[in-house]
Length: 477
Image (cartoon, rainbow, N blue to C red):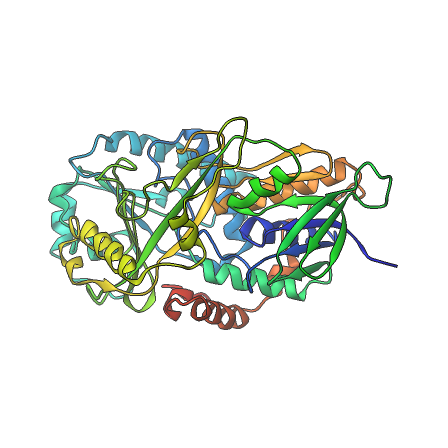
């Protein structure tokens, strides 16, 4: 008898794989289609967003959601979390006020405490009282005279290393050190892929393009959808559209309309040898899309650094944010961006944009002038439901029976989406009602650190990036 799957998932990005893993954890079978040879290819992420402190323009409610979701995802993929802090600052030239950020941080500390009261295992960002620390100009002057620390442990040691490099006279004070951790894409991809390959409940189809979807919901069959690929047809009872910025293509084929934005962005890989000690991630806030957009410098192993500059010369692109036209028409990128998405970057543009990114950071970190191009850009496109480009929390919608559309904007929302889909397929009687909530994913927990190390390294090299990007600054046991 031809197999019928309970759930078919189109897209092996972070939302698709976490949905498949969560279904498998509850014994629900699925088939997952990914066009690339491995899962979680982009858009890239490098930061947990545990509180949304990189986004001064979003609401407090979005910050609380990001904090909760980030903790959930960090608990799910602990081997992908780099436990180093983040330096947050506002240049004197910018409109944002430090007092506003401090008020938000106090709100987040209180919320973090409440999450720990609900479940002590939520304390993954350190003690709440250590979530952030503010430093005055006098504090910074004193720390700048201290010797650097190769392996910093305390907030002061991390700040000491950072402030020796930063032109802090350009910044409003106090500046802040926050327990917002790094998040390693290659390690998460490795753990997810190994777990899916091990699972008896998920049929992972990599290097597989979905060419068509046939709606069989009105035919009174044992399944609702036929998923066509280049080589076969698969029958499923429930369909999850988790294809990222391409979700609109499948919506359009099913005559479903949705107002949406899609956005292409890139980050750049540099090589730099500042001091012998580790430094935190560095954030210099600025208004998105202006020549003074946020600068972000993310440290990796072996003196590699990832750079975001939220200007149209660096991370953002002219015509990189595209809105649906008319009544939910499919937004489309121009030819240049389409070529980039298909790995068609021009070498001269890589060099040009990376050098602009280096110069941008140099404005706050003078010695960064000596940095050089360290590899190809990390890039990708994401969808944003509606018409607000500042939205940073997205989840899932259910536009019709037996169909879910994943609409995450940040990777931290993936588990929330998976749980909402799990609830919906019970509600529609695709599966029986689940009686017991599971607090852990045994499938993910069964993957060893050594296996993650090996595959993460292989994925970075296979995708053309320095192998060092697959490792954590602070190794875990």
